[in-house]
Amino acid sequence: MNKVLESSPSAPNRPRSITILIVLFLIQAFGTLGYGIFLGFNNGWVIFRKGRFLNFLPFAMADRGSSAFVLIALSIIMFVVAFAFIRQKSWAWLAAISIQGISLLVGLVEYLIDNPNYVALAFGVVMVFYLNQQEVRDIYHEKQSVT
Image (cartoon, rainbow, N blue to C red; front, side, top):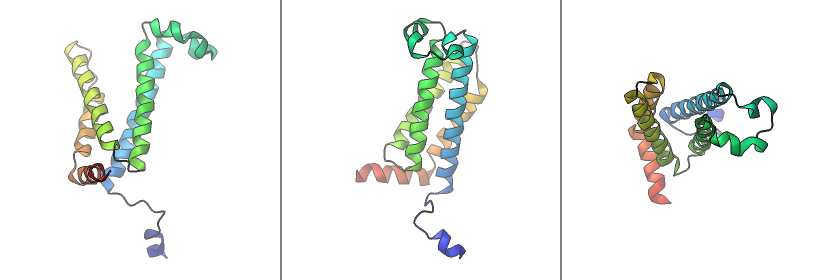
C-alpha cells in the first residue's frame, strides 16, 4: 500500500532541498510580515488599532514608519514566490534570488550604519546557499529554457 501512495500523482515530486527552500521562504515571509506589523504598531499607526487601514493610507505613507508598508508588501511578494516554488514555476528561482540579493544588500547597509540584523543576514546567506544547490538550479534553469 505504501508504494501506491508514493507513486500517486498527487504526491509531491520535488527534491528535498526545494522542500527545505519552500519552508525557509515561508518562514522568512512570515517573519517579514510580523516585523512589518510590529513596526506599524511601534510607530503609532492608529490604522492598525482602529481597523480603518484604507482611510489613513496616504497619511501613513508619509509617516516615519513607512518602512512597515514596504516590509508588508515584501512579505506578500515572498508568499507569492514561495507558492511559485510549490507549483515549480519557471520564474520562481530568479524572483527568489533577486529578493535574497536585495535582502542581503539592505542587511549590509544596516550593518554599515551600526544597526546590524545578524539573523536576517544569516538567513539570507542560507537561502542563497539553498538556491544555488545544483539540483535546484538544474530544475529551474531547465524550466526557464523550455518556456
